[in-house]
Image (cartoon, rainbow, N blue to C red; front, top):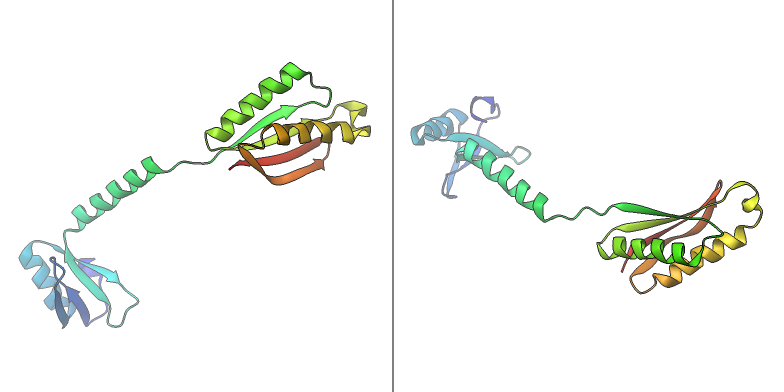
Length: 162
């Protein structure tokens, strides 16, 4: 910006977008000062480098404003976790599955974790049955991103919204 531009000559673009041509940095800077604006390098890798006459403070403000607007509109996908046990009762299963359904409908991913305690790990087929039941119960609102796999004493599966 302004005196920090070292390479000369440069291609100059006016504040209204018209091309002023190729000129020395000092001449471009004097033209910018004459209008009460700044000389900003916009394409440093081009040959010759491209500079623009603009109000740099206003430009930075507009860019920050656009970034805030974009941030408002974005939806961050979170990974929510729902934990089950191999011997889970029907009511508990339904409640946890309802919570997982709400998370999926909000647009979040759901990590289904089935925790084994003690000797329960000797029967992983019981855990796989519970995880399969969850997958079928939520099949209308989700698809399986990562299939159920055993990691230590936990069986995990990740579901994403459809």
